[in-house]
Length: 318
Ligand SMILES: [Zn+2]
Image (cartoon, rainbow, N blue to C red; front, side, top):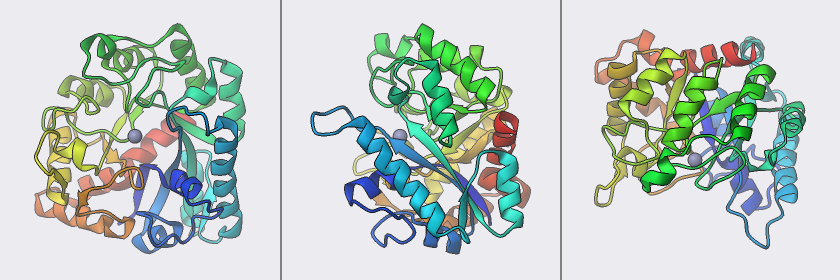
């Protein structure tokens, strides 16, 4: 089964390990070589912005991550090539190649300037997770503090969503405050995504989506990417674990609430850990097997695996 994964943090791992190529990293949850073996169609590679600290220079960090991405693509162009649109993904597939997208996890490098959106678009970025777990120029993060959770986008964040729509950059509400979610839902003229978020009704974590949010995301033509991290599948559980069975439960809840068009994949590989059944990209087929055994037909499993995500990419980017 082909698949599109909307979120991994493997570029962060490349920074920590000072690697300039992510083709083969045996200790990583994902690398290009194993993606290929697993049947991947497209992968979003996040440039995750770690919390600010004195030793990390944002510019140097971004350059490392983008450099690693570009070097990998140049060296392994028979396997994987950068994509700028949904049509690119289809063309690359026809040519027997996987597709790679760059994204930001935390929009702080945009620094409150719309021209930075254009600049990073020009460098290949096609999705921004508007916030991580802190306030930035776009707005406020998910939080257990109802005051923070209720805060909407900042005026710049609203303008930035409109500009991202114009450019053809995917707006990602994972990690965002609930107030920010509802602002995006109101403002965005194109489908948007929660690239790596699960169901709050099954797992009461502020990173997850309420049923109302899932319904609205679906109405807007967007998708939520199933996150494999134990803490989002099983919040509050002692020694929580991540199993294909639990991921399937979240998928089926999303379908019950928002229909089969709103579910996709956002593994969070190399951004999470713990007790995980699907802890490496080559184990992705375990999820498709589980969905089948839980009664989903092949058409629906294909939608979750890649068709829904590809539809959104084409709607947003062409
Ligand atoms: Zn994340």
